[in-house]
Image (cartoon, rainbow, N blue to C red):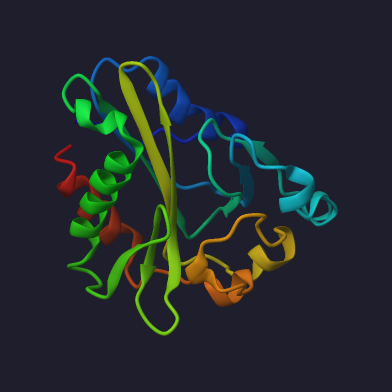
Length: 208
């Protein structure tokens, strides 16, 4: 698997690069990057008026962009490591089944991160959480399926200013049962490891 660490100054270009890797894939890729400033990223069909506090984003100078995959709206920025894997469906034909794709990628991510924090598990459709009562989410994930390749990407919060989320994002339209109507600040948490530790663990598990 080839490693991509490209970062663009333009927030939309940063997000678009994941899709570009998918569209032009001639192998398998892992991309690791971190936005230098806060950016709201909408899912492919997420309604901006129902999920984003547009006035607060405009006042704070936080851009709003849309990604090619589905899923919930997220706020990214410093302290939120982004990862993306582009997988070859000719090598892994079973991943055309969406549930198998979630299971495969998140299983790999669990194996990578558990040596750093053993109390993690998969929750909902595609979240990674720190276990507890209640569990708290540190990673949200989404995918885009094409004819020959699959893009699977997500967030890894490790030192993110979680208070920002409350002011810029509205409560999501669709919520997993385990969220139990908690606010963003009550629901989210940071993974207890440094960025370099997370990066090395992820690169190792994907054999870049």
